[in-house]
Image (cartoon, rainbow over the protein chains, first blue to last red):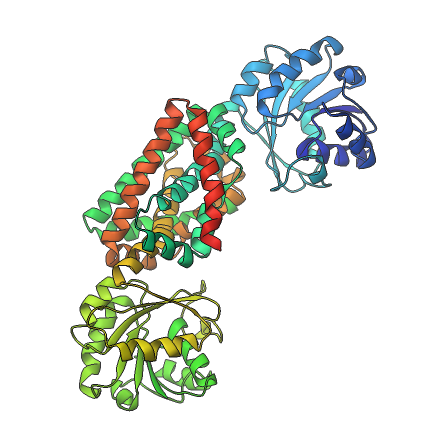
Length: 279
Length: 279
């Protein structure tokens, strides 16, 4: 199959490596001339160009750009495509993307591979990045069954675990387990930095160990990524944050009332049920 | 030196292993006959007993019982001690302990080794558990300089990093970097469990990965430990929690106002300053 990839970063580049190994012809497009050369050198694509017209021969195109650029890229791409071409994206929020792109190109299905590393860019691309990880596909009413089928088949061939759901359900699920943790964790760092007594502040820094390290990790991560989550998944993230605030307020009330039995039950429930998230 | 240890669990047991290796004579007391036998077999103590009178010959005694039992243990121990004996404890909160014990035994200094593993009990005892880790000592006005000096010397010989501060400063510092993370993390699990739509709930569980894993770890830990933190460090933990709630409310307001510039600055500050906690 001729498969196009727009945006040759960590995700687009890793996808190219796997798809070529599976026998597909990969056509890669990047804004940067240098990235196009690197993609050839690294075995990520068979042909590359800075011009979207390279994709005129593709049967399926993966849009692997930052979220803000997905819809504008599709608009520019349309004049070069015949109607049978299936488009998909790899953005980490789905409702905002699908609402923008589906009206532009009906033969589109939103996707989100749950894979990543701390690095980014084409140099970070690696084979088997997706193997064993989840890959969510989010068809809507207007999505042709054939578009879902074609992309699902490609994605399964990467040995991913495929989940199919609505864009709304996807966005609420990632709000809970990916975007809310970033905000919760960021607020921990923010609160600790608010200590005004220098001796306590310094001692906190000296005594911090694995508990603080793990709980603060994602909140001290890439700021652009955090803004992106909030911006494109604002409604669902706020729903999670409001629910979290309510839970925190109950906890504070429990401590104020010295209701140790209620606190113990709450901590027991969390210990009991946390493993459900890792089965 | 003759060093007594009351409570032969993870901390007391590990302390015994190190102190014997350093040439001290270790006298171990446990409520359990079986633990006394194990302590001898494992090389944790030279002599053991279920009776506190074994410690009549000790020059320094480490109280390594659960926090709730520290003061009652000191009360029972007093009749067997001569006035020069230095007492210290290893409890993870200090103000409540020092306030109870210092009036009972002036020759006392509170201590807190920042070391631990997920396991507990004498079977978990290991050599060099404290090496390279922080050890806080919390003298008060009535603490004799000699008591601080003697315990500090022993603790330094375990190659720990010793910090000396007031019990209040200690408790506020551990509230920030140890107890607050547990409550923040527990509230994350609690909030995620509040999702009432089964399809979203199930999808969240399927998609959870390293971000959720790290941020929820300490909140899904030992419930007894969590209750202990809240119970014995209630005032300082509440101070941290209220400050955290304020930080969270500012974040929610920023998202509601779609003030992405403020959000980005906040995330950048956390990314920039988090490393201060790990120098």
